[in-house]
Length: 354
View 1: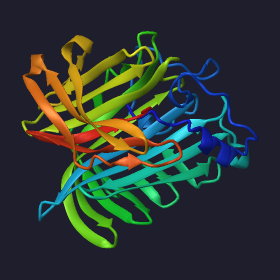
View 2 (view 1 turned 90 degrees about the horizontal axis):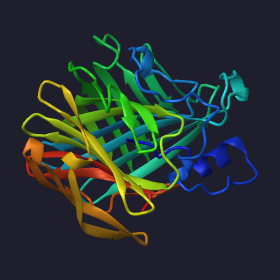
View 3 (view 1 turned 60 degrees about the horizontal axis):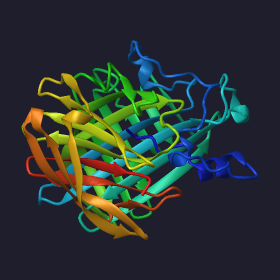
């Protein structure tokens, strides 16, 4: 549930606003009213490759990739790549500098001892950043996630690239498995009040390529995960952040779950269990037991970096540990994101609002 966009400072930097908007009750203003934008409603029929591309009527969307990687010597790495599209106002997209879209990119590499992150901003309409459905490509400056020439399908064979001052990666992602619609056939609720997004994933990518850290290059391989979401108001007022997991189990299943935290201490908890054949099953609050076990102090915050996760109906009882508990994304709006490991698998964890 990668919904940390609509970053206030990003909008100020690129659109030239004089003042920051008034503080919102929800995290990053994602619960603010969006009545003028297209709404997420149940019953959407997804169409591909069209839905791989941008959805201009909605306020926010993102293309989000994570990978759990390892080299021949057993060194473990995590890679993240995200592109956000943020509409400043409702209505048709305008050409050139009249375009009111803001694009934002995040990229990071994590090892057991290092964590590097970078961000990019771009104004829409001038080609610096964007996305298209066919042939699929999403980019900001020289960061890109795109279908390789000659691929059998739009997401069958991908190239993923990004770099920062102390890191770089160039990965090939391949999969012949079907996409997974999250929630109720792609309608993913985020609150009891009805806030939702359209959400699908490709959790079956295999990644191969290179990761560079501080000038040293590592040849790596491992599982990767793509999330695609779009919405106009994905949070309710009073929802302060979330804890999101994507997990690859050695026994063949995949698991996505998230808890959206609320000011009163409760949370909206749901997920998707994906069996070995790629068939999804929605998990509800009563199906999941999610408990933080230990925290790490980072930048004046106490971040839960060790978790107990139980799904009795699936005979799952694991403890996830951060590969690097200090995987703090020290960007304009900071958050924690990095690879996790547990007995029987690997995955990724994102935590916001702490």
